[in-house]
Length: 323
Image (cartoon, rainbow, N blue to C red):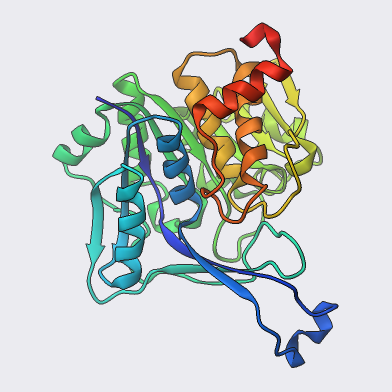
């Protein structure tokens, strides 16, 4: 049995860094050089690599193009010792690419992107594949709202079966990659009762629920059936909610902010690691926040991911009762 099975999309991120022009208005005529880095493998890719970095055994179910960029992603995951046998290579397709313009500082969303022409992850699972993916302690999905074709179908049913078999379940909804008016929760209503841990950022929480406050958004999500809601709030920290209870964790600053790409994905990995250790929610939040604090000190979502030992050292400095 592995620790975590993950279902979700994989893509390339192209990060453009360096010294840019004095302002955005200069971009059309600017011809200066910049640094570029191609990283694997998007939000879910960062989460699985960071779970592995923390010492967990991880399997990923996804789809990739059968081309050099797909091979680049597959190689990165395999070098991170992630089980990729449930990744389907789809011929005659192109993969997803997110382009991040970081010449003017960090930004959470890509400047532009290319959607894949292959399925983001499998739309059907054989009984054998279900048994394989659910031979784990925890089932996670990232990017559920990205992929409308997956709503109300096999992914939902996979989570129902996971709950029936006693797995811990978690989901980071992210956002639709198409025009959709709030409340976005309509895409999640039939999967939320099968989710133990639901994660989103503050903007997503408001769009999911059309609520005027984060507390109200969390209440709506809890009433929809999930047991625990985590709302990530960037440099304002994060808040975990259960029915009648909440706890806020301040953001952890460990150095100069270089790039916030992947910070939320690192937070997810850290919180899920703590969940598998059966830690109190407050300790999971601190661990996750420290891990995210490391990540933002460098470029990309996994390159500056700390080891479990590094995070624990920082935890001991902040909370002696958790040592």
